[in-house]
Figure: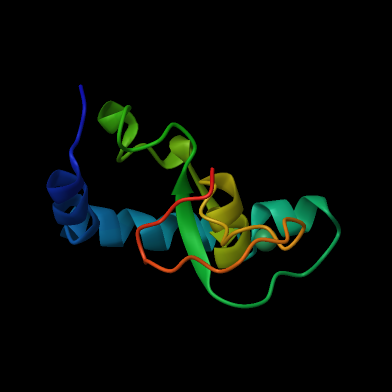
Length: 101
Ligand SMILES: [Zn+2]
């Protein structure tokens, strides 16, 4: 099974997901699980992550055991959505869709 982007967007707007998302947040005491592992208290926006990603494992989409609370930073890190690394001294891209890697 595979969910394309439009199907995933639809999923994230479903009542089933918004309900389950609240359950996952409550179960995790509204704490980022990775910050907690590092002994820090998470700050900022919390998101609920699919451990088995939604795109490739939609059968686990509504499985509470497949969900974990992550802060926005950790969630971005997990999905490699970080902005380009500050270690690389590159000029900023001229075009929005230009990729460096
Ligand atoms: Zn975190």
